[in-house]
Length: 527
Ligand code: RAM
Image (cartoon, rainbow, N blue to C red; front, side, top):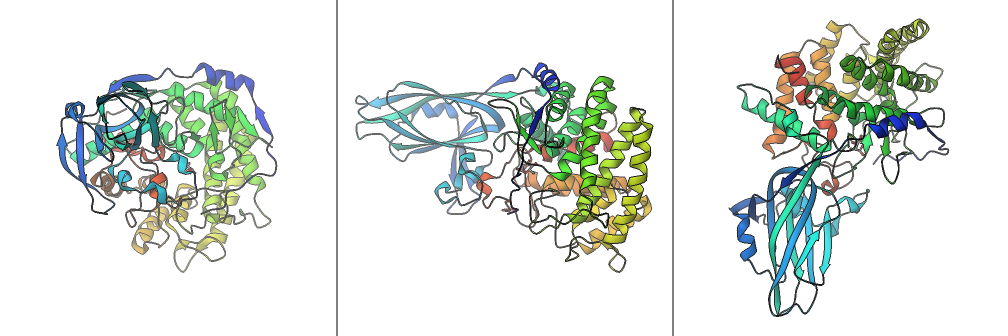
């Protein structure tokens, strides 16, 4: 676990005008009725991956008189984000004790087999979507107040009495999202797997699009800047809800702290507030979100409002350079994210991301006709590219290294390629060499895989990028994904940055970008 960086000082600056603009853009959520499509019987015999042994019509539920320890598992057909209502009644003698129920909502079937009382992860157990409910009087209509992210619902009767049973007369729900399925057309291709990848990507994005671009509707249910950047890219190619992107840009721009830093994430309730977490890379990438937005919309007013915030992130980033012109190594801290890989050294990647963000800064400055900033950033960027090679390029290995231990990781190579420290041809050699060497410090999140695919495409390895996309995201589909996951390490399918997969998110924003790649680079005619 990376140690969480708690700031000594946290002085929030709210830009009321920006926050007012964001508030005006708050979306009305679309509501869609949902209902279970089948009742499942599972077998798992202690194995983490249960097997569905039978499916029944959910209408048969109302005929069951449930006693202590009886369990039903409902399948809602695919992943949804929304609210659920249970209509309950009793059978037998008068209800002479509370009906005591246990409910568990799961994004994947595997979550149902996790014994949550044994949870020992380092983030809150509160993220596990389970409830213990007493119903004193039956019949009852139980409108559950929480919003859940789920496909499956397990209902277990913890207890009734010897004289009565519980009957579940009906289960209904409403799914919510800022966008509608009708807003998107899926890609047309003969390749079934690509079609599925596209649909699952779009569903992932849709389910994360709520009042802001959430990172995961199960967890953390807030907006992280790094995730938002990728969601916005996927949104332009699918739902095209550019006003939600604009709203989120203004929220981040309107909630800075200390010397003008953008927070790594922000909260909406009880009122909008930045988190007291600074992530070096996320803050720097704000300029890239702004540039993408401006290129898609041509919205000059937003560019003019938020340009100073974006440039400020680069100025702040540059203050971290030490006397050698590199970023000191803070890999033990949650300070520069890059990826969740165990033991990943982020020092070289942090410099690469700074360089990358400067290129975006230059483009922004060009649109703003800000000659002074163009000159300053261009000179500095070239200087940093040279420093990056001097400090981190290992001529013998033909790879970039990072940190005192000279660690070789996939992430470092990918970010150096995206920073364009070398020419395109040399970048191509580098990515091919990386694939051949297959460094032990691998990529574990779709977030990092996104950047790997991007690096392949930018190095003229488009076909290979497509194969890799099919391999990685396709494998998640083979493993049963209705929406793409927060973490997926094909070499360790039970990997979790939190000490337990029970709190991993299985509908996670940063994993939705195949739909962006497919439409931008492969399937002509799709936005
Ligand atoms: C986790 C979430 C989020 C990500 C941060 C860095 O809490 O997965 O999506 O952006 O880490």
